[in-house]
Image (tube, rainbow, N blue to C red):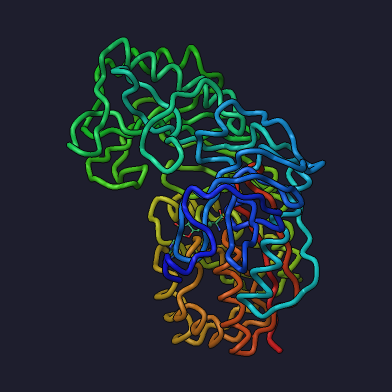
Amino acid sequence: MKQREYPVYKGQVLEVQITGYTSEGQGVARVEGLAVFVAGAIKGERVKIRIAHLGHTAAYGDVLEVLQESPERRKPQCPYEKDCGGCVFWHMSYEEELRAKAQRVEDALVRLGGIDLGTIAITGAPSVTGYRNKAQYPVGLVKGKAEAGFFKNRTHQVVPVRACAIQGEQADAARQIVVDWMQENHVTVYDEKSGKGLMRHIYVRTAAVTKQVLVCLVVNGDGIPKEKQLVEKLLKGVENLATVCLSIHKKPGNAVLGDKFVTLYGEGTIEDVLCGLRFRLSPRSFYQVNHDQAERLYDKALAFAGLTGSETVLDLYCGTGTITLALSRKAKKVIGVEIIDAAIRDAKENALRNEITNAEFFCADAAQAAKRFADEGTHPDVIVVDPPRKGLEESVIESVVSMAPRKVVYVSCDPATLARDLRRFAERGYETKKAEAFDMFPRCHHVESVALLARE
Ligand code: SAH
Protein backbone atom coordinates (compact mmCIF):
# COMPACT_ATOMS: atom_id res chain seq x y z
CA MET A 1 0.00 0.00 0.00
CA LYS A 2 1.44 3.36 -0.95
CA GLN A 3 1.53 6.15 1.58
CA ARG A 4 -1.01 8.37 -0.21
CA GLU A 5 -3.60 5.58 -0.05
CA TYR A 6 -3.63 5.44 3.75
CA PRO A 7 -6.96 6.46 5.28
CA VAL A 8 -5.00 8.05 8.17
CA TYR A 9 -2.01 10.39 8.37
CA LYS A 10 0.91 10.73 10.75
CA GLY A 11 0.00 12.89 13.72
CA GLN A 12 -3.74 12.37 13.25
CA VAL A 13 -5.72 12.00 16.48
CA LEU A 14 -8.68 9.62 16.36
CA GLU A 15 -10.84 7.29 18.38
CA VAL A 16 -10.67 3.58 17.65
CA GLN A 17 -12.13 0.30 18.92
CA ILE A 18 -9.64 -2.46 19.75
CA THR A 19 -10.81 -5.77 18.29
CA GLY A 20 -7.83 -8.12 18.69
CA TYR A 21 -4.07 -8.46 19.12
CA THR A 22 -0.99 -8.67 16.92
CA SER A 23 1.45 -11.54 17.37
CA GLU A 24 3.56 -9.09 19.39
CA GLY A 25 0.72 -8.34 21.82
CA GLN A 26 -0.29 -4.88 20.56
CA GLY A 27 -3.99 -4.09 20.30
CA VAL A 28 -5.41 -4.00 16.77
CA ALA A 29 -8.04 -1.58 15.47
CA ARG A 30 -9.37 -1.17 11.94
CA VAL A 31 -9.82 2.18 10.23
CA GLU A 32 -11.49 1.84 6.83
CA GLY A 33 -9.92 -1.58 6.38
CA LEU A 34 -6.43 -0.51 7.50
CA ALA A 35 -4.99 -2.28 10.54
CA VAL A 36 -3.79 0.09 13.24
CA PHE A 37 -1.51 -1.39 15.90
CA VAL A 38 -1.78 0.14 19.36
CA ALA A 39 0.67 -0.99 22.06
CA GLY A 40 -0.80 -1.10 25.57
CA ALA A 41 -4.43 -1.36 24.40
CA ILE A 42 -6.78 -4.21 25.30
CA LYS A 43 -9.40 -5.98 23.21
CA GLY A 44 -12.80 -4.35 23.73
CA GLU A 45 -11.37 -0.96 24.69
CA ARG A 46 -12.19 2.33 23.01
CA VAL A 47 -9.07 4.47 22.88
CA LYS A 48 -8.02 7.89 21.67
CA ILE A 49 -4.78 7.51 19.74
CA ARG A 50 -2.32 9.56 17.74
CA ILE A 51 -0.93 7.97 14.57
CA ALA A 52 2.82 7.74 15.18
CA HIS A 53 4.01 5.86 12.16
CA LEU A 54 2.80 4.47 8.84
CA GLY A 55 4.21 1.04 8.07
CA HIS A 56 3.99 -1.08 4.92
CA THR A 57 0.77 -2.85 5.77
CA ALA A 58 -0.40 -1.16 8.97
CA ALA A 59 -0.31 2.10 10.89
CA TYR A 60 0.94 2.45 14.46
CA GLY A 61 -0.85 4.52 17.06
CA ASP A 62 0.10 5.74 20.55
CA VAL A 63 -2.57 5.73 23.24
CA LEU A 64 -3.50 9.25 24.36
CA GLU A 65 -6.45 8.21 26.52
CA VAL A 66 -8.39 5.07 27.26
CA LEU A 67 -11.99 6.20 26.75
CA GLN A 68 -13.62 2.94 27.68
CA GLU A 69 -11.52 0.67 29.85
CA SER A 70 -11.52 -3.13 29.65
CA PRO A 71 -12.32 -4.98 32.89
CA GLU A 72 -9.10 -6.90 32.13
CA ARG A 73 -6.93 -3.78 32.56
CA ARG A 74 -4.42 -4.03 35.42
CA LYS A 75 -1.81 -1.80 37.01
CA PRO A 76 1.62 -2.94 35.69
CA GLN A 77 3.70 -4.73 38.33
CA CYS A 78 6.98 -3.67 36.75
CA PRO A 79 8.43 -0.13 36.89
CA TYR A 80 10.34 -0.66 33.63
CA GLU A 81 7.52 -1.99 31.47
CA LYS A 82 7.20 1.17 29.36
CA ASP A 83 10.89 1.28 28.39
CA CYS A 84 11.82 -2.39 28.33
CA GLY A 85 11.24 -4.35 25.15
CA GLY A 86 11.00 -7.63 27.09
CA CYS A 87 7.43 -7.78 28.42
CA VAL A 88 4.31 -6.54 26.63
CA PHE A 89 1.38 -7.81 28.71
CA TRP A 90 1.75 -6.13 32.13
CA HIS A 91 -1.23 -3.85 31.49
CA MET A 92 -3.75 -6.73 31.41
CA SER A 93 -4.90 -9.70 33.49
CA TYR A 94 -3.05 -12.98 32.98
CA GLU A 95 -6.31 -14.58 31.83
CA GLU A 96 -6.63 -12.05 29.03
CA GLU A 97 -2.97 -12.59 28.06
CA LEU A 98 -3.62 -16.35 27.82
CA ARG A 99 -6.71 -15.76 25.67
CA ALA A 100 -4.65 -13.54 23.34
CA LYS A 101 -1.94 -16.21 23.06
CA ALA A 102 -4.34 -19.10 22.44
CA GLN A 103 -6.13 -16.99 19.82
CA ARG A 104 -2.80 -16.25 18.14
CA VAL A 105 -2.07 -19.98 17.77
CA GLU A 106 -5.61 -20.70 16.58
CA ASP A 107 -5.49 -17.87 14.01
CA ALA A 108 -2.09 -18.95 12.70
CA LEU A 109 -3.28 -22.54 12.27
CA VAL A 110 -6.41 -21.48 10.42
CA ARG A 111 -4.99 -18.67 8.29
CA LEU A 112 -1.50 -19.94 7.52
CA GLY A 113 -1.97 -23.66 7.98
CA GLY A 114 -5.51 -24.19 6.73
CA ILE A 115 -6.09 -26.24 9.89
CA ASP A 116 -9.20 -25.77 12.00
CA LEU A 117 -8.98 -27.62 15.30
CA GLY A 118 -11.49 -25.37 17.06
CA THR A 119 -10.45 -23.54 20.22
CA ILE A 120 -6.82 -24.17 21.14
CA ALA A 121 -6.22 -25.11 24.77
CA ILE A 122 -3.49 -23.16 26.54
CA THR A 123 -1.73 -24.15 29.74
CA GLY A 124 -0.95 -21.07 31.81
CA ALA A 125 2.09 -20.84 34.06
CA PRO A 126 1.88 -21.32 37.86
CA SER A 127 3.66 -17.99 38.31
CA VAL A 128 3.97 -14.92 36.09
CA THR A 129 6.98 -13.55 38.01
CA GLY A 130 10.45 -14.90 38.80
CA TYR A 131 10.06 -17.78 36.36
CA ARG A 132 13.08 -17.27 34.08
CA ASN A 133 16.14 -19.42 34.67
CA LYS A 134 18.32 -17.45 32.26
CA ALA A 135 19.20 -13.76 32.30
CA GLN A 136 21.26 -11.87 29.74
CA TYR A 137 21.93 -8.33 30.89
CA PRO A 138 23.60 -6.06 28.33
CA VAL A 139 26.32 -3.83 29.77
CA GLY A 140 26.50 -0.17 28.79
CA LEU A 141 27.61 3.27 29.89
CA VAL A 142 24.96 5.35 31.61
CA LYS A 143 26.06 8.91 32.48
CA GLY A 144 29.65 7.73 32.15
CA LYS A 145 29.19 4.81 34.56
CA ALA A 146 29.17 1.10 33.81
CA GLU A 147 25.65 -0.32 34.23
CA ALA A 148 23.74 -3.42 33.20
CA GLY A 149 20.05 -3.97 32.66
CA PHE A 150 18.07 -4.19 29.47
CA PHE A 151 18.04 -2.52 26.09
CA LYS A 152 15.47 0.25 25.85
CA ASN A 153 12.71 -0.71 23.42
CA ARG A 154 14.01 -0.91 19.83
CA THR A 155 17.42 0.61 20.74
CA HIS A 156 20.75 -0.57 22.12
CA GLN A 157 20.65 1.98 24.91
CA VAL A 158 21.13 0.26 28.27
CA VAL A 159 18.61 1.01 31.02
CA PRO A 160 19.94 -0.02 34.45
CA VAL A 161 17.62 -2.28 36.42
CA ARG A 162 17.49 -3.11 40.14
CA ALA A 163 15.17 -6.08 39.83
CA CYS A 164 13.53 -7.70 36.81
CA ALA A 165 10.09 -9.07 37.70
CA ILE A 166 10.40 -12.20 35.56
CA GLN A 167 13.93 -13.07 36.77
CA GLY A 168 14.93 -14.78 39.98
CA GLU A 169 16.67 -13.02 42.87
CA GLN A 170 19.98 -14.78 42.27
CA ALA A 171 20.27 -13.31 38.76
CA ASP A 172 19.63 -9.80 40.10
CA ALA A 173 22.15 -10.32 42.91
CA ALA A 174 24.83 -11.53 40.49
CA ARG A 175 24.21 -8.63 38.10
CA GLN A 176 24.56 -6.06 40.87
CA ILE A 177 27.80 -7.57 42.16
CA VAL A 178 29.33 -7.55 38.69
CA VAL A 179 28.20 -3.95 38.11
CA ASP A 180 29.71 -2.82 41.45
CA TRP A 181 32.95 -4.64 40.62
CA MET A 182 33.06 -2.96 37.18
CA GLN A 183 32.55 0.49 38.72
CA GLU A 184 35.12 -0.05 41.50
CA ASN A 185 37.77 -1.31 39.12
CA HIS A 186 36.98 0.98 36.18
CA VAL A 187 36.39 -2.00 33.94
CA THR A 188 35.70 -0.78 30.41
CA VAL A 189 32.40 -1.26 28.62
CA TYR A 190 32.16 -2.68 25.11
CA ASP A 191 31.18 -0.16 22.47
CA GLU A 192 29.37 -1.60 19.44
CA LYS A 193 30.50 1.18 17.11
CA SER A 194 34.23 1.18 17.80
CA GLY A 195 34.49 -2.48 18.82
CA LYS A 196 36.54 -1.33 21.87
CA GLY A 197 35.95 -1.93 25.58
CA LEU A 198 35.74 -5.17 27.57
CA MET A 199 32.38 -6.06 29.12
CA ARG A 200 29.50 -6.99 26.78
CA HIS A 201 26.90 -9.00 28.71
CA ILE A 202 26.30 -10.56 32.12
CA TYR A 203 24.76 -13.96 31.59
CA VAL A 204 23.25 -15.86 34.53
CA ARG A 205 21.71 -19.31 34.43
CA THR A 206 19.93 -20.72 37.48
CA ALA A 207 18.74 -24.27 38.05
CA ALA A 208 15.15 -24.36 39.30
CA VAL A 209 15.48 -27.59 41.30
CA THR A 210 19.14 -27.76 42.42
CA LYS A 211 19.26 -23.92 42.73
CA GLN A 212 22.82 -23.93 41.32
CA VAL A 213 23.88 -20.68 39.65
CA LEU A 214 26.21 -20.14 36.70
CA VAL A 215 27.56 -16.64 36.12
CA CYS A 216 29.18 -15.99 32.77
CA LEU A 217 30.79 -12.68 31.80
CA VAL A 218 30.78 -12.07 28.07
CA VAL A 219 33.96 -10.17 27.26
CA ASN A 220 35.65 -8.63 24.26
CA GLY A 221 39.10 -9.80 25.44
CA ASP A 222 40.94 -12.81 26.81
CA GLY A 223 40.52 -12.14 30.52
CA ILE A 224 39.29 -9.74 33.19
CA PRO A 225 41.11 -7.64 35.80
CA LYS A 226 40.75 -8.55 39.51
CA GLU A 227 39.38 -11.95 38.60
CA LYS A 228 39.84 -13.47 42.09
CA GLN A 229 38.20 -10.50 43.77
CA LEU A 230 35.14 -10.82 41.55
CA VAL A 231 34.80 -14.57 42.18
CA GLU A 232 35.05 -13.98 45.94
CA LYS A 233 32.38 -11.28 45.83
CA LEU A 234 30.08 -13.52 43.82
CA LEU A 235 30.65 -16.44 46.21
CA LYS A 236 29.75 -14.18 49.11
CA GLY A 237 26.72 -12.55 47.55
CA VAL A 238 25.07 -15.17 45.33
CA GLU A 239 23.46 -18.09 47.06
CA ASN A 240 24.38 -21.49 45.58
CA LEU A 241 26.90 -20.05 43.15
CA ALA A 242 28.29 -23.14 41.41
CA THR A 243 30.48 -21.75 38.65
CA VAL A 244 31.86 -18.57 37.11
CA CYS A 245 33.12 -18.40 33.56
CA LEU A 246 34.04 -16.05 30.76
CA SER A 247 32.71 -16.19 27.26
CA ILE A 248 35.30 -14.76 24.88
CA HIS A 249 33.39 -12.78 22.27
CA LYS A 250 35.40 -10.45 20.05
CA LYS A 251 33.19 -10.45 16.97
CA PRO A 252 30.71 -7.68 16.22
CA GLY A 253 27.00 -8.50 16.04
CA ASN A 254 24.03 -9.21 18.27
CA ALA A 255 24.86 -12.79 19.32
CA VAL A 256 25.10 -12.68 23.11
CA LEU A 257 27.63 -15.45 23.68
CA GLY A 258 30.99 -16.08 22.00
CA ASP A 259 32.31 -19.50 21.05
CA LYS A 260 35.15 -19.85 23.53
CA PHE A 261 34.63 -20.34 27.28
CA VAL A 262 37.12 -20.03 30.14
CA THR A 263 36.17 -21.35 33.57
CA LEU A 264 37.20 -19.14 36.50
CA TYR A 265 35.53 -21.14 39.25
CA GLY A 266 33.76 -24.52 39.46
CA GLU A 267 33.05 -26.83 36.55
CA GLY A 268 31.81 -24.35 33.93
CA THR A 269 28.40 -26.07 33.98
CA ILE A 270 25.48 -26.50 36.36
CA GLU A 271 23.01 -29.32 36.89
CA ASP A 272 19.22 -29.18 36.99
CA VAL A 273 16.47 -31.78 37.36
CA LEU A 274 13.74 -31.86 34.72
CA CYS A 275 11.05 -34.53 34.28
CA GLY A 276 12.80 -36.52 37.00
CA LEU A 277 16.11 -36.57 35.08
CA ARG A 278 19.38 -34.81 35.83
CA PHE A 279 20.74 -32.45 33.18
CA ARG A 280 24.18 -30.92 32.91
CA LEU A 281 23.90 -27.49 31.31
CA SER A 282 26.66 -25.53 29.59
CA PRO A 283 26.15 -21.82 28.91
CA ARG A 284 25.91 -22.46 25.15
CA SER A 285 23.33 -25.27 25.40
CA PHE A 286 19.68 -24.48 24.85
CA TYR A 287 17.51 -25.08 27.91
CA GLN A 288 13.89 -23.95 28.24
CA VAL A 289 13.79 -20.82 30.40
CA ASN A 290 10.65 -21.78 32.31
CA HIS A 291 11.32 -25.03 34.15
CA ASP A 292 7.81 -25.84 35.37
CA GLN A 293 6.17 -25.09 32.05
CA ALA A 294 8.85 -27.05 30.17
CA GLU A 295 7.89 -30.13 32.21
CA ARG A 296 4.24 -29.68 31.26
CA LEU A 297 5.07 -29.12 27.60
CA TYR A 298 7.33 -32.19 27.47
CA ASP A 299 4.70 -34.29 29.24
CA LYS A 300 2.28 -33.35 26.49
CA ALA A 301 4.84 -34.12 23.77
CA LEU A 302 5.34 -37.53 25.40
CA ALA A 303 1.59 -38.13 25.60
CA PHE A 304 1.27 -37.20 21.90
CA ALA A 305 4.09 -39.64 21.04
CA GLY A 306 2.06 -42.39 22.77
CA LEU A 307 5.00 -44.76 23.17
CA THR A 308 4.62 -48.37 24.32
CA GLY A 309 8.25 -49.38 24.72
CA SER A 310 8.89 -50.98 21.35
CA GLU A 311 9.45 -47.83 19.29
CA THR A 312 12.44 -46.17 17.72
CA VAL A 313 12.21 -42.40 18.09
CA LEU A 314 14.17 -39.69 16.31
CA ASP A 315 14.40 -36.31 18.09
CA LEU A 316 15.58 -33.55 15.76
CA TYR A 317 16.87 -30.30 17.35
CA CYS A 318 17.40 -32.09 20.66
CA GLY A 319 19.53 -29.53 22.57
CA THR A 320 20.94 -31.18 25.70
CA GLY A 321 18.68 -34.18 25.18
CA THR A 322 15.82 -33.08 27.44
CA ILE A 323 12.97 -34.46 25.31
CA THR A 324 15.11 -37.33 23.97
CA LEU A 325 15.94 -38.68 27.41
CA ALA A 326 12.39 -38.20 28.69
CA LEU A 327 11.22 -40.25 25.67
CA SER A 328 13.92 -42.90 26.19
CA ARG A 329 12.17 -44.31 29.25
CA LYS A 330 9.21 -45.32 27.11
CA ALA A 331 10.95 -46.31 23.86
CA LYS A 332 13.20 -49.09 22.60
CA LYS A 333 15.68 -46.65 21.16
CA VAL A 334 16.00 -42.87 20.85
CA ILE A 335 18.26 -40.85 18.57
CA GLY A 336 18.91 -37.14 19.17
CA VAL A 337 20.34 -34.69 16.62
CA GLU A 338 21.59 -31.20 17.44
CA ILE A 339 23.92 -28.72 15.74
CA ILE A 340 25.67 -27.21 18.80
CA ASP A 341 28.60 -29.33 19.82
CA ALA A 342 28.51 -28.29 23.51
CA ALA A 343 24.83 -29.27 23.70
CA ILE A 344 25.55 -32.73 22.25
CA ARG A 345 28.39 -33.20 24.74
CA ASP A 346 25.92 -32.29 27.49
CA ALA A 347 23.34 -34.68 26.00
CA LYS A 348 25.79 -37.62 26.01
CA GLU A 349 26.84 -36.81 29.57
CA ASN A 350 23.17 -36.53 30.57
CA ALA A 351 22.46 -40.03 29.23
CA LEU A 352 25.34 -41.31 31.38
CA ARG A 353 24.24 -39.38 34.48
CA ASN A 354 20.79 -40.90 34.21
CA GLU A 355 22.07 -44.38 33.33
CA ILE A 356 20.21 -44.32 30.05
CA THR A 357 21.68 -46.77 27.55
CA ASN A 358 19.16 -46.68 24.71
CA ALA A 359 19.96 -43.12 23.56
CA GLU A 360 22.33 -42.08 20.78
CA PHE A 361 23.29 -38.50 19.99
CA PHE A 362 24.70 -36.93 16.84
CA CYS A 363 26.08 -33.46 16.35
CA ALA A 364 24.78 -32.50 12.90
CA ASP A 365 22.56 -30.19 10.96
CA ALA A 366 19.03 -31.57 11.21
CA ALA A 367 18.47 -31.39 7.44
CA GLN A 368 21.64 -33.32 6.67
CA ALA A 369 21.10 -35.89 9.42
CA ALA A 370 17.46 -36.45 8.43
CA LYS A 371 18.49 -36.94 4.80
CA ARG A 372 21.19 -39.42 5.82
CA PHE A 373 18.79 -41.41 8.02
CA ALA A 374 16.21 -41.45 5.22
CA ASP A 375 18.82 -42.55 2.63
CA GLU A 376 20.05 -45.30 4.96
CA GLY A 377 16.50 -46.63 5.23
CA THR A 378 16.01 -45.77 8.92
CA HIS A 379 12.31 -45.97 9.84
CA PRO A 380 11.62 -44.35 13.21
CA ASP A 381 8.10 -44.98 14.53
CA VAL A 382 7.88 -41.44 15.88
CA ILE A 383 9.84 -38.32 14.92
CA VAL A 384 9.95 -35.33 17.26
CA VAL A 385 11.03 -31.92 15.93
CA ASP A 386 11.67 -28.82 18.04
CA PRO A 387 13.26 -26.30 15.65
CA PRO A 388 14.19 -22.66 16.34
CA ARG A 389 11.72 -19.89 15.40
CA LYS A 390 12.32 -20.08 11.67
CA GLY A 391 10.78 -23.56 11.64
CA LEU A 392 11.71 -26.49 9.41
CA GLU A 393 13.53 -26.30 6.12
CA GLU A 394 11.49 -27.90 3.37
CA SER A 395 14.21 -30.54 2.97
CA VAL A 396 13.76 -31.62 6.62
CA ILE A 397 10.04 -32.13 5.99
CA GLU A 398 10.87 -34.15 2.84
CA SER A 399 13.26 -36.41 4.73
CA VAL A 400 10.92 -36.82 7.72
CA VAL A 401 8.09 -37.84 5.41
CA SER A 402 10.27 -40.24 3.45
CA MET A 403 11.13 -42.07 6.71
CA ALA A 404 7.38 -42.69 7.00
CA PRO A 405 6.96 -42.40 10.80
CA ARG A 406 3.51 -43.20 12.15
CA LYS A 407 3.54 -39.96 14.09
CA VAL A 408 5.33 -36.64 14.10
CA VAL A 409 5.34 -34.51 17.24
CA TYR A 410 6.14 -30.87 16.47
CA VAL A 411 7.22 -28.61 19.34
CA SER A 412 7.30 -24.99 18.20
CA CYS A 413 8.18 -21.55 19.55
CA ASP A 414 6.53 -19.70 16.65
CA PRO A 415 2.90 -20.35 15.70
CA ALA A 416 3.35 -18.83 12.22
CA THR A 417 6.18 -21.12 11.11
CA LEU A 418 4.46 -24.05 12.83
CA ALA A 419 1.30 -23.43 10.80
CA ARG A 420 3.28 -23.06 7.56
CA ASP A 421 5.08 -26.36 8.24
CA LEU A 422 1.89 -28.20 9.21
CA ARG A 423 0.46 -27.20 5.84
CA ARG A 424 3.54 -28.60 4.10
CA PHE A 425 3.18 -31.84 6.05
CA ALA A 426 -0.51 -32.00 5.09
CA GLU A 427 0.42 -31.73 1.41
CA ARG A 428 2.54 -34.85 1.95
CA GLY A 429 -0.07 -36.94 3.72
CA TYR A 430 0.45 -36.01 7.38
CA GLU A 431 -2.63 -34.63 9.05
CA THR A 432 -2.55 -32.47 12.19
CA LYS A 433 -4.64 -34.27 14.80
CA LYS A 434 -4.11 -32.12 17.86
CA ALA A 435 -2.41 -28.92 18.94
CA GLU A 436 -2.05 -27.18 22.28
CA ALA A 437 -0.35 -24.02 23.48
CA PHE A 438 1.86 -23.62 26.55
CA ASP A 439 2.74 -20.31 28.10
CA MET A 440 6.45 -20.51 28.80
CA PHE A 441 6.88 -16.73 28.83
CA PRO A 442 4.25 -14.96 30.95
CA ARG A 443 4.02 -11.21 30.25
CA CYS A 444 6.15 -11.59 27.08
CA HIS A 445 4.68 -12.07 23.62
CA HIS A 446 6.21 -15.47 22.82
CA VAL A 447 4.10 -18.59 22.97
CA GLU A 448 5.06 -22.25 22.63
CA SER A 449 2.90 -24.95 21.05
CA VAL A 450 2.97 -28.66 20.43
CA ALA A 451 1.19 -30.48 17.61
CA LEU A 452 0.57 -34.12 16.81
CA LEU A 453 0.62 -35.26 13.20
CA ALA A 454 -0.25 -38.70 11.90
CA ARG A 455 -0.07 -40.37 8.52
CA GLU A 456 -3.48 -40.46 6.91
N1 SAH B 1 14.53 -29.89 22.19
C1 SAH B 1 15.44 -29.11 22.97
C2 SAH B 1 16.01 -27.92 22.24
C3 SAH B 1 15.06 -27.08 21.44
S1 SAH B 1 15.66 -25.52 20.92
C4 SAH B 1 14.78 -28.68 24.26
O1 SAH B 1 13.55 -28.64 24.35
O2 SAH B 1 15.49 -28.37 25.21
C5 SAH B 1 16.18 -25.78 19.29
C6 SAH B 1 17.51 -26.44 19.19
O3 SAH B 1 17.82 -26.60 17.79
C7 SAH B 1 18.67 -25.66 19.79
O4 SAH B 1 19.37 -26.48 20.69
C8 SAH B 1 19.55 -25.31 18.57
O5 SAH B 1 20.93 -25.29 18.89
C9 SAH B 1 19.22 -26.41 17.62
N2 SAH B 1 19.42 -26.15 16.19
C10 SAH B 1 19.29 -24.96 15.54
N3 SAH B 1 19.50 -25.15 14.22
C11 SAH B 1 19.74 -26.46 14.02
C12 SAH B 1 20.01 -27.25 12.86
N4 SAH B 1 20.08 -26.70 11.65
N5 SAH B 1 20.20 -28.57 13.02
C13 SAH B 1 20.13 -29.13 14.26
N6 SAH B 1 19.89 -28.43 15.39
C14 SAH B 1 19.69 -27.11 15.28
